[in-house]
Image (cartoon, rainbow, N blue to C red; front, side):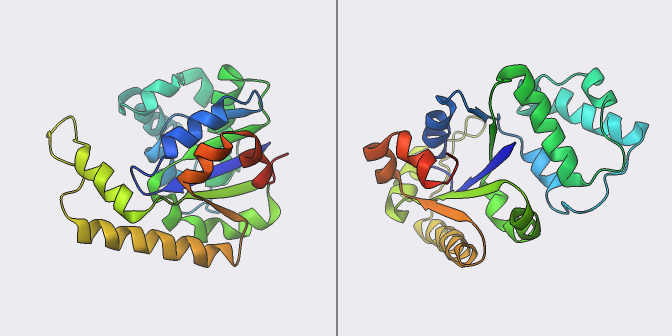
Length: 210
């Protein structure tokens, strides 16, 4: 099983890219799940502590979190958690449960989250020995800000960003980390213009997934 971890700055085209990947019968695109990232990828090598309390905690996430509800995991799924597993192994286990139910024939799983870029350092040792592929989509900062300014949160009706300087700083941090990581691990940087011209075929080829 191969895993794609996709990171981005909001309004960079990550959903469009994920939708392109999902058209392939070989790729399962997971719904968003920041809770899984925060719980399992901050310390991926740490031992996942089993037990009823931990199981109920995760079950509560999937019952209560609006994004995790889409995964539709049940209590029976959590009964099969492997023992003596690391946080990262549990992460893969949960993704595989979802994959086997939605697209069992897929050999590649894609998981995306904006904050992943800040956790990639923790995953470098795993990337060197596992089939993990890192993608970062980088859109022109001006386009990112224009899109964030025009996008409003549904709960507050406020723009995602009203400060171009703050957006530029966050964009610069992301890009600098992405280029630094490109020197030490297998991370691919993708521009939205490439997506428009290429659509799907050579994106998969470029990432080395064929």
